[in-house]
Length: 167
Image (cartoon, rainbow, N blue to C red; front, side):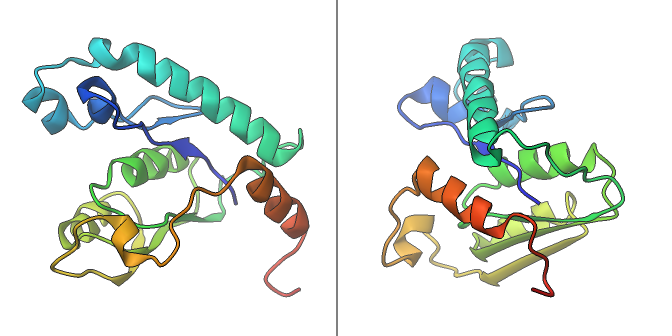
C-alpha cells in the first residue's frame, strides 16, 4: 500500500508551520506551531495548495497511471524514515483512516520518544525501533540520509507491483 504526503520545507516560518498536505483529504495543521508563529491556516494556504499539487504529481508518477489499491477493509502500513514532530505521520494516518482500513500501523526506525505516544491515538499500532532520549534530528541516525529521487521510488514500486508477502 503506497501513500504519499509531502512534508513542508522549512525555508521560512510560514513553511515550517504548514502541515503535510496529502493528495486527498484536508491538510493537518500543527496548531501549536501556527499559534507560536502568530499564523492562521489561511496564512499557509498557498503553501498547502502547492504541496497538494506536488503530492498529486508524485502519486501519478509513482503509480505509473495505475489505479490505487483501495484501503477499505485492508491492513495499511504507513512507513516513514523517522519522526521528530509527528505532523507528517499524523496527516498520513488521518487520510488513510478516512478510507476505513481494517487496521493501521505506523512504522519508523527512529522516533522522538513523545511522538510514539501521540501517534498511538492515530494508529492501531506504532512500531518504532528506537526512541533515543538525545534524539536531535532524524538525519543524525543515518549514515546516508540523501533524498530518494522520484525515479528511484517509481523503479522500486514498479518492481514490487503485483507481488505479495508470499513471493
